[in-house]
Length: 89
Image (cartoon, rainbow, N blue to C red; front, side, top):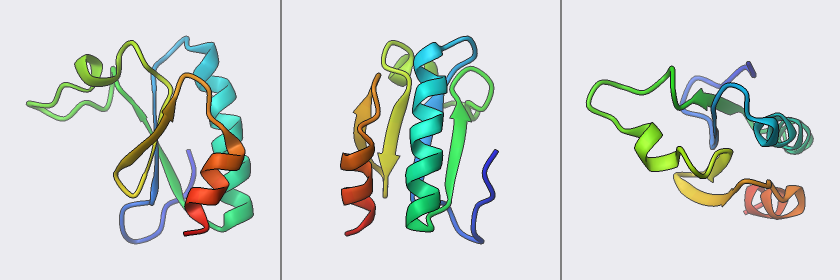
């Protein structure tokens, strides 16, 4: 898992076990965030769901999902160029 800064990372990647698209997304997010010098965090929707949360209900059919600064940027396939542009803002 990537190392984050003291605060919440700008990039969150929602995934689940056994998801081949999640593996692809993880590679894209890793590359783009390393190039941009940004921290990111991966959240397994089936394991890391907070009490009272509903990450499976919210993201279950759409993982992987990428958020930047709390705004969803995409799902299923992560567009590395789009993510890089968003991080440059």
